[in-house]
Image (cartoon, rainbow, N blue to C red; front, side):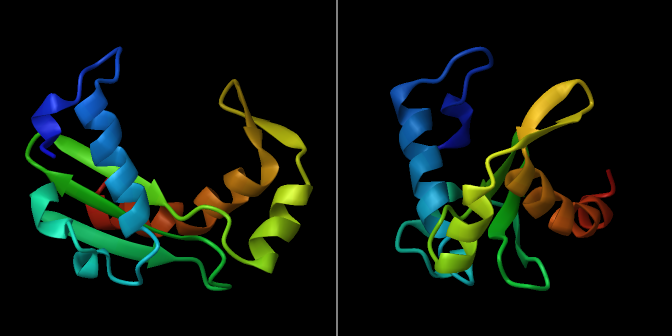
Length: 116
């Protein structure tokens, strides 16, 4: 599981496995406690959650990549958000309204941390 296997414009099997492990690590309050965390070889990791604790995940980086991983639906509050499947437009793309608001709830913190 090394990031140099990620390819632009395509996804190889090793990359898919790497990203699946990153998704599993997002279910931990601290992704560093995930069993295979050391194989990620991240230089930096920032766990995050929105104030209502509905949006969880982490942003991790290393020299050649950044990984943004979110938990999926895992509780009743998440299901309530998912039921509203309306999409909204943002920057020319249509996005699930619940996902948009989930990302928006942590985006400012992530942007400040990584300066972008």
